Every structure is written in C-alpha cells, then in structure tokens.
Length: 403
Figure 1 (tube, rainbow, N blue to C red):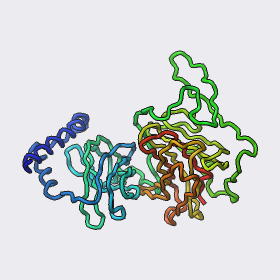
Figure 2: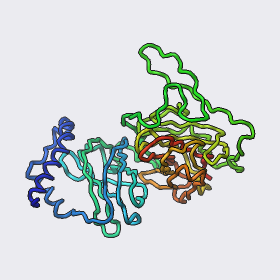
Figure 3: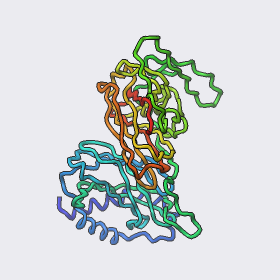
Figure 4: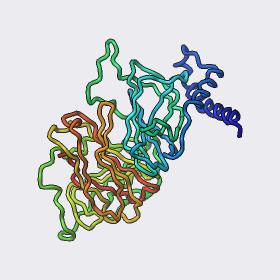
C-alpha cells in the first residue's frame, strides 16, 4: 500500500469518526466555521510527519468513556504489551469543534503496570469558560524521550466548564471535584442467580415482595446466615480504634459500577454488582473476620465496582490498611484487581493495588499516604475490577481504615 493511499484512507476514517460529533454539534457550532477539506488534509499531513509512533513500549487497544461532569472527563484506557512501565505515560489532546487543539488540558492517571491492564485516566479542562469538544487523542509515550509508542483517536462530544477563574466566578477551592455521573448501560451476564435466590452459599434470600402493576420489580431482601458457634476461628478487626473507619462510614460513600449507581447494602443477586456490609463472615481461608465489606463488580467481563468516599485525611494519618480476600466458596473466580486511589484538585494518587485470586487466601493490603495529601479534603476510592469473567468475584475488605 503506497503512503499516499494509506494517508487517504486514514483521512477518510478520521472524517467518518468526526462526522457524528459535527452533526450533533451543528447548533452549538453555528457561529464557528468548520474547517475545509484542504485544511483537514494539511493538519493530517502535519501529524503524519511530526507524530510518528515507535515500536516496543506497548499498545493502546481501546478507550472507553467512564463518566465525568463539569471540567472532567473520566476514561478507561485498555493497554496491551507494556514492556517499560516505569517510563510509560499517557498524553492527552482534546480537539474543539473546528478540530483545533485545545489549550489548558491536563491529564492524570494511575501508574501503568507491565503487560496488559486497564488504566483510569482523568482529563481536566483548566481554561476559562465553557468549551465544546469533538474528539480526543490519547498517546502512550516514553516519558524519557517523549516518543509515542501508540496512539488512539476517538470522537468525544462533550461540553466542559473550565476551572480557570473568570470575572464573576469564584475560583475552585483546593480539594473540590465535580460530582461524578455515569451513563453506561447494564449488561446482566455472569453468575446470575434466579429471582429470589441467593447467589452464594451461606446466604439466604427472603421472598420477593409483591409488585404493583406498572412498578419495577423490587430487589429481594437478603440477610447473612449466622455462622455456627465455634465453627471457625474468629479474627478481631483490629485492636486500635481506626483514625477513619471506612467500614463504619461505607453507607455514606457513593457506590457505582460499570452499570451505574448502586444502592448500599443491595441484594446479592443484582447483576449490576453490589456492596454489602456483612459484619462477621467466613472467608476463603476458613477463618471468620469482623467488619467485612463485600464489593462484587458488575457481572460482565472486566466489569467493575467502586466506592467514592468524600472525606478529610487526618493530618496524623500515614497509611491505608485492610485485609482483602474472597468469601468462602469462591473457587470459580478468576481473580480481581483491587485499587485504592486518592483524588483531589485534578490529581490522582495510587495508594495501593494488587490482584487477588482465590488461591491467595486473605492478605494484608496497605499503602502510604503522602504527606502532601494529609489534612486535605479528598475523594478516596475503593475499586474492584473483574477479569474475563465476573463469576464468584466475592471480594471482601476486612476493616478498611486510614490510620
């Protein structure tokens, strides 16, 4: 294939991708002259000459819009074959309705692990006023040389309200972050239970309540079955009083999954995912623990669940601590990836992350909270991500706390 023919095909694909946002934005762009075909071709030629990728560092396989509001857009970037994670960085370019690059765009993301992974990426518009976007380009770059290993372009039709100060507008305060919105559609697959039947051994479901004509079917109420006295050894949560008891305030967090917002203490056969405070429960190592919080991701491949806590990190706090492991009987799970993340003022910090499989038993999870994050109002997120299957991903946090 000749370079000219390849370039022509690339231009046709690029224009096709952008035709949808241009059509949707016709009203908003009435006063903005759209670029001519010649101008688009010149821009594409400049990118072709100035922004070649180099092989060897990894590939961006897919990018999904997770949510966002105000100045923020939250994306999930699926990466494959990352060989130099210590040098890998995601770079973001936003385009307006005229396909011009927007100034005042910042990006923050989780650390990029080696191999295949999905990385959370937050894009923030820091300019003044509001702006309409048409597309986004994400590059996986070598932070040492600045060269790109891989690029991914996609249409992204958003109206962003900048965080830059304007006349008559109050500046953003430290720690402020716009509320999240989720508009993803549920896809109920996986370890689906029959209506009114518990999805796990050891839990009993109450009968379904009568449903009024035209009303949505109510979720069944579920309760934990008491464990036989002396059947298993008991692990106390902790002896010391936690500085911030994340189990105790879990009902105040905002819980959501790939399918959208979730109720706290929802039914354990909800295919959207669920979060449940179990109190005392037997885990996969055969021991019984107190202050057990179960978080099951959506029942789809690579589904997720997360809890967002709006809180102030105590000035004396230095670490996040918790035990993590599957509930007893979760032998069919292919494992989950868990993350503890801090967000605030456009920044993201990964406190702790690891993969948990049934064979791991119950393990300690902890991470240092940097001094620069102490004493601040932040959003702390507990995240759980499924693998290729969400079957029996009964992940629990035991006495999660900030100390």
